[in-house]
Length: 82
Image (cartoon, rainbow, N blue to C red; front, side, top):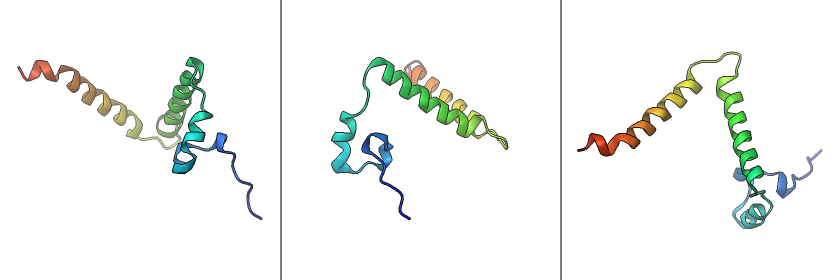
């Protein structure tokens, strides 16, 4: 038995086709609360995928540390190059 189609509102960005992109964007919540909720959901997905796992390794934490090192280097690059 075929699964029912997912409504456009509930689709993830990677599942949306190019022709549906404008309609999908029009359905998004761009209020401050909606934007904060989107960041919170993204953080929760990252945390549950890389940090909060049973057989966890250093993958998630090392990604955060590598990002911090790159960001710190970018911020201080003008001081280093002088």
